[in-house]
Amino acid sequence: MTSFLKQPRAVWAVAFACVIAFMGIGLVDPILKEIAADLGATGSEVSLLFSSYMAVMGVAMLVTGVVSSRIGAKRTLLAGLVLIIVFAALAGSSDSVGAVIGFRAGWGLGNALFVATALATIVQSSRGSVAQAIILFEAALGLGIASGPLLGGLLGEQSWRAPFYGVSTLMAIALVATAFLLPATPPQGRRTSLADPFRALRHPALLLLALVAIFYNLGFFTLMAAGPFALPSFGIMEIGWTFFGWGVLLAFTSVLVAPWLQRIFGTLPTLTAVLSLFAVVMALMAVFAEHEAAIAVGIIVVGALLGINNTLVTEAVMGAAPVERPVASAAYSFVRFTGGAIGPFVAMKLFEHQGVHAPFWFGAAAIAVGVVIIAAGTPVIRRALHDAPAAHSPGEAEAELIGDLA
Image 1 (cartoon, rainbow, N blue to C red):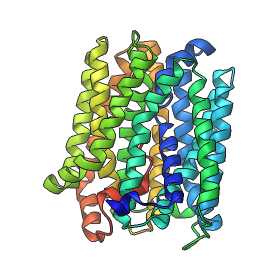
Image 2: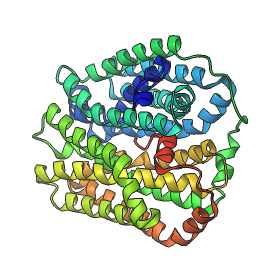
Image 3: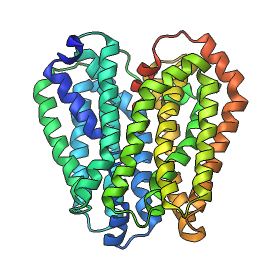
Image 4: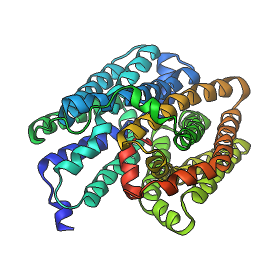
């Protein structure tokens, strides 16, 4: 424990920046309704704050490996931090929903550049074992995911603009700390190309898992976008606390529960069961969509399921294709983020035209398709996992793909 806590200041600087970066996932949930009201936007328009962020982040995942393998991890981290600072501040200063959506997309680009290299930087700069460095990274990930909605609620009570300014300010502090405390990190390893992730998708197991991820992300992003609008009597802080509960359970199950279930039942059986439960919970939320207590409980329960799912899918992805981990990560992240990014917009269009039940039925149906794909593809995926060497733990795999939430 002593070696775990006694880390160089550079490690703590990057870990702090990780916390702020992962806050961005749930930061806007508590203020979605306020943005819509203040800027005269519809629910489907503000849902594009998720779609633009995730779509750009997915495409940018194809570029991050190319960039970091040429300019080094530190410069890539700093570039990502600068983009987040600028675009978060611009989003907070915007007077139209279109501008907020556009600047949120720029934020997604910065986030992709930063988080794609954060783990490698922490591992390279930390004292102690690689496992301890991964625990530190996952702690930052969990703290950021859980605290994002809470920060959004606390600052959002002052103004919907305040959470954006808050992130920009905190990231500016992280930028200064990283610039001065992190030693230079010259490029290492093979220079990757933009074509490498697309070549990786020729491996059937990796492609199947990426398709599964599209459909469960459709459900996940639907929940993030439609959840606040299905809680009409909830204020900013009540929504913030609800999604805080979601984030806490997601962090807890991803780090502690998922590896335990994997050891007992195996990766694919557990993953199939958890995805099935996710679809059932979304269906129950559709049935009871007019009962706010049911929606709030459903959001929190889904956090626990997503934590397990994220870890196990990531573990499977890392062993499914005989390519470098960064290449597998880029291919998988590109498919799941860009494909799943349409979910919030479609869900909120259904909300506007079909009522509060419709988005959750859409999410449940999308996740059910993912269950069918993984059930049908289990022999192919199992064969790929059996042939691949066990080079890393589930926790390490989860950390390397970051973003599940993200």
